Length: 236
Image 1 (cartoon, rainbow, N blue to C red):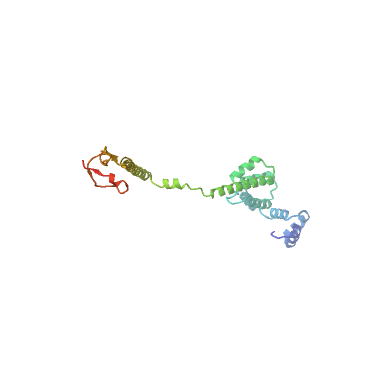
Image 2 (image 1 turned 135 degrees about the vertical axis):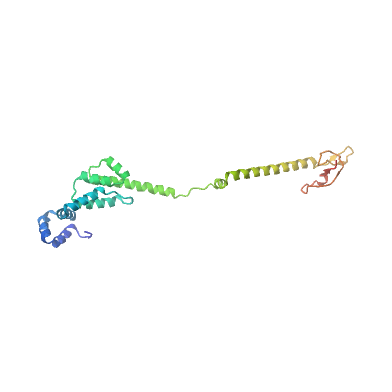
């Protein structure tokens, strides 16, 4: 067909093209055929041999909906085959339609128990629409990049043994630093103020032994201490 002409115009053109026995055949049924679909069914039924029809029936019954084939594409195929074979029985049409559907559609359509082929097609299209909508939402969610936990990622990138050893080294180093600072602060508190003897004169407290009045000579004095004159090493 493939034209914008109406069925009556097409049938008029077809009638002028048929010659011989085909022309005689057409003259006998012309008054009872009003659409292109009817003409196609009757013509194929009259002029296609039984072997070809058997091949078409086998092809129709074995047809399965392939992965990217839509319901509309399957329907178009089956309508063409129904016309070729002259199939009018609704139960036969429903059976081959459900059999051709993908498994997830076939189960639901069969469970709905449609009474006509058109009803079965409608049910299948609704299932297809829901499936496409669900898959669209699913794909949209999957395309959203997950938020990275940079802290976890950086820690997890360190091997277990390496991470454990590094932690121990850090703790040990911090412990040593804290201990050293504590000792220095205690020394500052203890030795920051000079002791006085009974005569009111200043006497030194030994930095090494902590005793007051020891005779000392300066050796090493920490540079950060502002009370350097009271920070001396014990000679005893």
